[in-house]
Length: 471
Ligand SMILES: NC(=O)c1ccc[n+]([C@@H]2O[C@H](COP(=O)([O-])OP(=O)(O)OC[C@H]3O[C@@H](n4cnc5c(N)ncnc54)[C@H](O)[C@@H]3O)[C@@H](O)[C@H]2O)c1
Image (cartoon, rainbow, N blue to C red; front, side, top):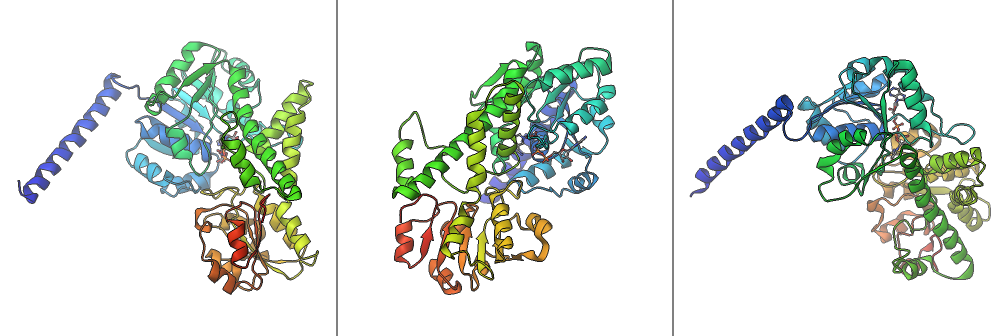
């Protein structure tokens, strides 16, 4: 077959498949055959709500995302995704175009016909450390009169143990009938959210009646094709699972950071120690990288919220308190190293900062260690030059012209007295060290992510200080 004939044949076949796929979908919707197509309302269109809603639309469900932030909704309607999350824009645009994903500020339109009403509003830290549930309760009051028969309310927000049952009680009062409430905590990581959602290690669902879990099992089925488990449990266990998971991860980070600080003092190298322990299968390697402390919208607030839950039940959360304490101190580590190096004379020193987001592949700066360092450097009257591939605008909104924002990481180094590396973006991993040296006034690097080999850095003529590295 010559190539033109082959191309025409393939085009014909592609069209045939497209038509087939479309009719299968219509059949499934119309006659309820094949996989169940659900109408879903997603209340709260932030990191979690937008990713969850979009991924459910991607498998053919009708999803309406609601948010009180009119500007956010207007942007999403234009296909302008307000957060940086790799792969998300493409999915949002495609599903919106197909009419499966819509955005609104009107709860009524979304909830009235929905079979599953997800709540994914923020649950930030309150003044006393406990989770602030004001947004969640507002949503419960708003949606109660709108719920259709058989609708299930699914709480995706991270909420303290007991909240789901309280929501069910409140809905019973407001609606005058029993409303099913399910807890479905989310485990996605910003920066890898699509992958985490579409290939979850497990899906956790807490219910008061096992039948309620079946609707959610159908919904998640397309993403659980590799036999990863769909775990059904009690409401309280599901609520606790989310907190325990985050607190366990935070504990690992604080533990290895404390060990790294100790290595610094005793002449050991945390990277050698890390390898020495990681090969032990009981320990493993995950989340045992020392650094400048965890940040973000989840770990800090979730550790404190669980402390608050424990206190309210008269259980002393000694480990959790220590985890939080170590982390708060760790965010200061780079500053203290610099302070020591410059013998307190930081005024007018030019300090370059690489990385502002709390971790790579996100523009989220909530509780980011970079902010603690910037605060300290500004208070010491240093001249701070920063770069981040995507989080720069968010930092500019906080600090305005008190910092110099550079569009390339090398530009931060002009006449710099030192460089501080705070976020381990890939583009920082293999830089041109000769060029860096040429730009800097002094070849001094304080690396909060242990990106480079200390011996090589010394050979290259840098004064290089990592976290717990023996140089
Ligand atoms: N971000 C994460 O990586 C992550 C991961 C797992 C779980 N969680 C949890 O998921 C929840 C949401 O987190 P997030 O990071 O998506 O928060 P977010 O701040 O990015 O988004 C929350 C959204 O809810 C909206 N909202 C607030 N009140 C509302 C109301 N009454 N009606 C409609 N919308 C309203 C806000 O405008 C905002 O857009 C939190 O409980 C968080 O702990 C977050």
